[in-house]
Image (cartoon, rainbow, N blue to C red; front, top):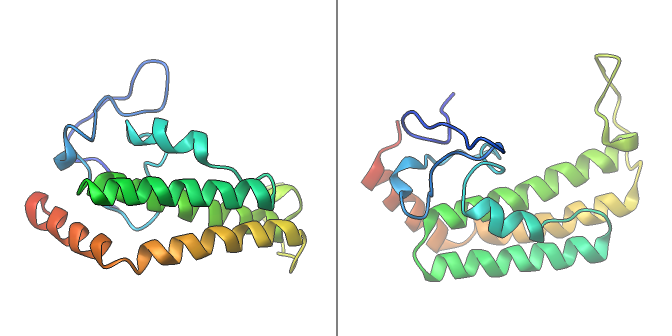
Length: 159
């Protein structure tokens, strides 16, 4: 499984972040289709995490809209790394909210055993997930995202 970072990169002393500014060094970033790196890729983590919320539908809708706005800013600047990290935050909103929608307390495991999902344990969290899913789908369908992803792979490789 590929790491989200190319080469050896340490973490900062007081946090989980990588000790790299990925806006200045986009070649160090490796695209992954999942959410890996969402809390480590700076300066994007500092720009996006404060916007992210799943507490209730109002907060989540506002958060998804704000993250989409940032996504568009990154896109307008031709910043694929920012676009991709914004996509990861939208994806994380969807997946985390779905976990809370299906499992009491959002806990998928209890005593080391996977719990049976409940459909729908928490309807509001399902609505939160759907709010994020709509924004996530819009990003995934954006032709600019696919073009810039391909350009990033071509320039920096996929290994």
